[in-house]
Image 1 (cartoon, rainbow, N blue to C red):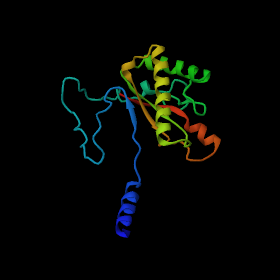
Image 2: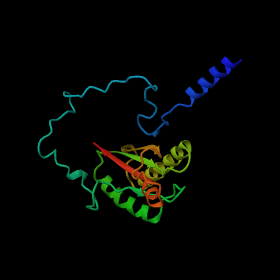
Image 3: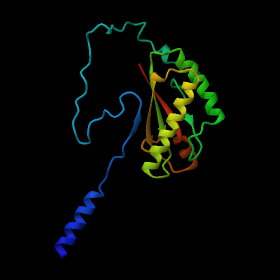
Image 4: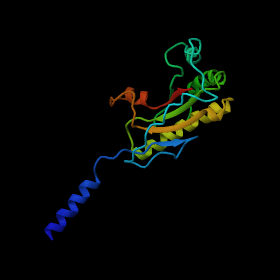
Amino acid sequence: MKRAFLLLLLVAVAACGPKRPPVVTTGPGAGTSTAPGTYSPAPEPVSEGPDIQPVDSDMASSSDLSDPSGEGGPLEDVRFDYDSAQLTDAARGLLERHAQWMKSRRSLRIAVEGHCDERGTVEYNLALGDQRARATRDYLVSLGVEGAMLTTVSFGKERPLDTGSTEAAWARNRRAHFAVSR
């Protein structure tokens, strides 16, 4: 009896080990990840083909990724109120400027990342991050940005900008972030 109890206790402790929370992804390529614990080699770089062109000095400039406001990265993060995925008036104004920038750079691909502060469960924050990313994407599409250039992903509380546990830190972490690629 004692041996069975110890065995059950060991199984329960092993099951409670550290786990990585899932990342919620929507848009093109969603649902194409490999199973946890499996190896998937990186794709080979493509060096030949009809669409491959060498990069010359003119193409190497990052002028098409310049910040519309001139204040750091190409697109400023959108901030959200506590426990909300509703866009504020300030967020809408910011997204209107971002939409103009995006519409003039239609060849780019932009992932809209939803983030939350540390409060709440992993599952709740993944869902809230997804709602924030989708609200941001949907508003950009309503402003004329091509939906095909935008994907959404939720990181919940797993990638904080500020690891502090203050209201100021939490406010920095409640955001939609833009990852821009070609």
